[in-house]
Image (cartoon, rainbow, N blue to C red; front, side, top):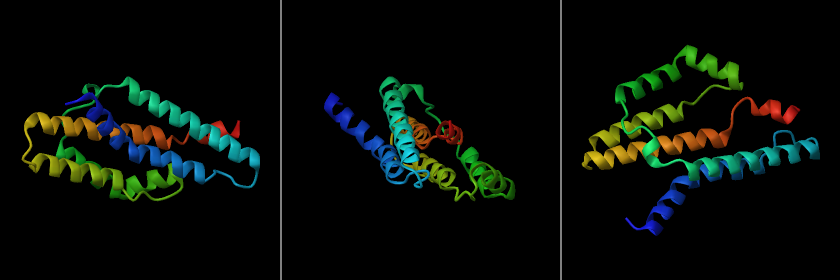
Length: 150
């Protein structure tokens, strides 16, 4: 595969991740003060630079190449359970729609059933895990609230 083609695939994989930053910049954490908007933008820009840095430094081979559909199904079931929903409500103040777990399960099933070679399937799994990791980094964590409050 040509180097230019690899770069375009890499940018395609990051489009969803970069959209998280666009949304975050357009939606401030607290719009009542200009200072909080500036803090939010600084935080988003720092997070964006960190994600781009992680993307540059990590190679696809560093991510897992296998995925268990049974485990993915268990994650979906756990997410939809009362305990999973209560955990989400406690941590984030809202119920989880479980799209990440459901997407992982659907990807696993479709990748397992595809007619691709085993090496192509492993590569697709690595791409999936890399994208999920970068999305989590892009969205940040509940600890980011404390950075804004400092």
